[in-house]
Amino acid sequence: MDQTVLWTEVGAFAQVAAAVATFAAVCVSLWLARSERRANVKVRAGLRLMFAGDGSAFEDVISIVITNFGMRAVRISSMGWRTGWLRRGPKWLGFQYAVQKLDHRTSMLNSPALPFDLGPGQETTLYLSPDPFRNGGELRGNFFNRHFPWRRKPSPAKICVIVFLVAAKNVVTRAERGLERFLATGVITNGAERANNAANAKV
Image 1: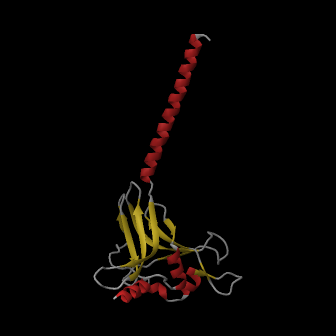
Image 2: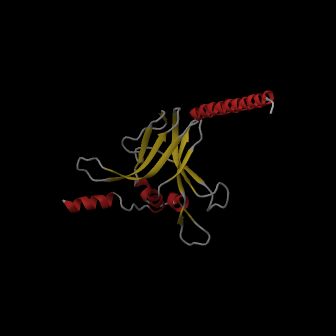
Image 3: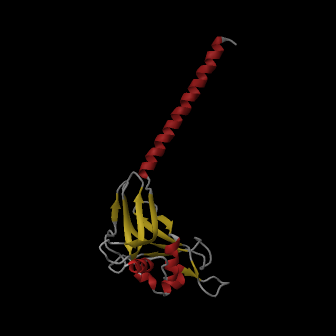
């Protein structure tokens, strides 16, 4: 092969490789810039035991942990619940929404007041009292439970926690099974009552 043709092909290949590398670098830069602007918030919701360590009894709490994994600060405006399975469909399958009211009856000690800001890498926890959720009523009968046409008794719905962000997509996370069961039935298993009974038995 003519040396001139060979080096021409090598030069063309090098130009193509350089163009591909430049394009990839631009794509990575754009992706990083977009990632820095995008909110990245994770939520965990479940039942926990609160223990003061001063000799007082164990206490059941609903824990909503909000963590900001992103590179930008976010504002948490409110939180609430979503039950159901489908965005559209029959009433017994469709989504239902409720905003959680945080006042002296529901919000517990050390819970931040809404709205609040969460900086990059920061985490905070909302503690809710389970007492307002223990009693039955319309909320349990038709929101946390659904009436399927083929069943006489209501059945637990899929329950998710929603954290509402300002100028960003809301975060929807399914509640842990223990919390789902409690919201649907009003009963906490393996909670504070059991822990207190076990502690008293050792005295």
